Image 1 (cartoon, helix red, strand yellow):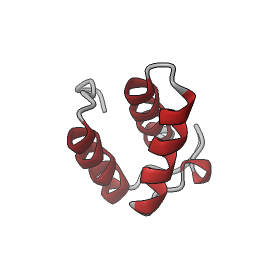
Image 2 (cartoon, helix red, strand yellow):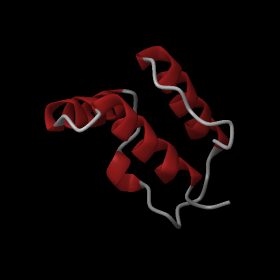
Image 3 (cartoon, helix red, strand yellow):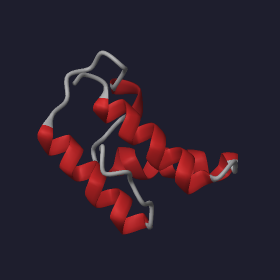
Length: 70
């Protein structure tokens, strides 16, 4: 299902930031430091299992709970 990575990134940023723009920027920077540029993914991007695993791990690391559909 294309776009899964984009949805994961958006969920991680939204849940962690909770409306705080500074935290949005910090979370995006953390993703980039982990090698995941949020701007590289769209709703039509191919889903790479390694990137999905990295995002799930990062979410757990920063305390973001993801729905089981991700």
